[in-house]
Amino acid sequence: MTKKEWPLWEIFIRGQHGLNHRHVGSLHAPDAEMAIRNARDVYTRRKEGVSIWVVPSSEITASTPSEKGPLFDPAESKVYRHPTFFDIPDEVGHM
Amino acid sequence: MYAQMVKSEGMKSLEEMSPEERAFQERVDRGEKIEPKEWMPEGYRKTLIRQIGQHAHSEIVGQLPEGNWITRAPTLERKAILLAKVQDEAGHGLYLYSAAETLGVSRDELFEKLHSGAMKYSSIFNYPTLTWADMGAVGWLVDGAAIMNQVPLQRTSYGPYSRAMIRICKEESFHQRQGYAIMMKMAQGTPEQKEMAQDALNRFWYPSLMMFGPSDKDSVHSAQSMAWKIKMNTNDELRQKFVDETVPQAEYLGLTVPDETLTWNEERGHYDFAEPDWNEFFEVIKGNGPCNEERLGARREAWDKGAWFRDGLTAYADKAAARRAASNVAAE
Image 1 (tube, each protein chain N blue to C red):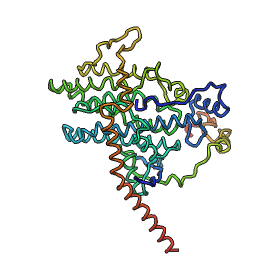
Image 2: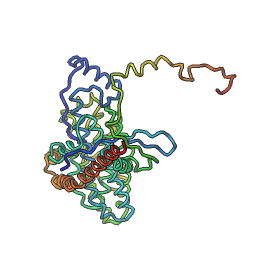
Image 3: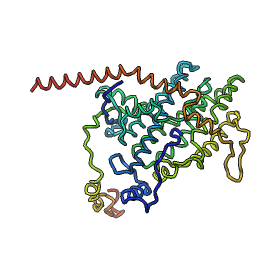
Image 4: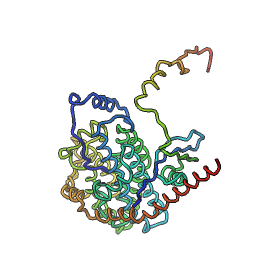
């Protein structure tokens, strides 16, 4: 019986259309090479991607849930960052 | 369902809850998703580990009854399709194990609990697949029943579980349709083939109804799980929905659902149907079904006989890491 558990890897896939790699899930593998092989079987069985990144889960630093307020609330009052905040008269045309 | 009779924790009213518990319940009620590192009641965490774990085990053990027919599929195309379906089940198991692990249980712990019998998998996989028509019945009925439960679970309160369900549901429809396609072929075939299709329906009908778990009146764990939104519908609701959708599909095939009491109830707008034999269900859950020993035996054997391979990969990874470390030192 295996004593040591394989580490966990986070899997990122870039889809067909040139968008960013996107987190799709995680899996266990002994090393990065096997993680890519396994990710290919687990996450791209239906041509979901053209490129795979694997990152050891232990290397990811995440913001803590309790920081949610201080981190994200300030953006709430800054609606002027969205273009729809500004009324442009129809006569001006598309902008 | 793929998770049956999952033991839940006692239910509290909002007044009885601690401030943390109340805030949690209110988040769930608002439809917010709960994420792994956030505070959650211990009961929520434990119940979810049991439920997601059981669901994952069902996907993995569920490969066995179908794997049985890969080498005997009637055509190369059928073989490739069945192989793809069984590979999907492996994938589904992996998505779900990963979701369970975010709750603080390890993969090896989950395997150990499956192999020791401490955790269960769905009762349905303890029935044998005797003919090729069973591949049709399993896809049509068993995956069909699973979809009934999995579609609403996409909205479950626990983020990783919900995301796994969304991924699974995308793939599950292929499973049901390939099963129904097999049934169509058989039902429209020779009299002997149609006979096989009918026989498969006869054997899988009641075990499929059992997948939803005991009747609501006997289901003690539902209320808390529904309040937490880790169970979205009652067992009886889903069973009724399954019967209502499946009966016309059987009629199209020209096959007879093995239930003499089955009638359309105009007033209710649903079919009335006979309950499965719940004694049989409890016997299968206890380990006395026709294939319990065979299924668990196959899982244990695969785990034990694969140990040298897992160890080999680990040893290789360790050596490669040590070599990299050493060459880094030499370069400094």
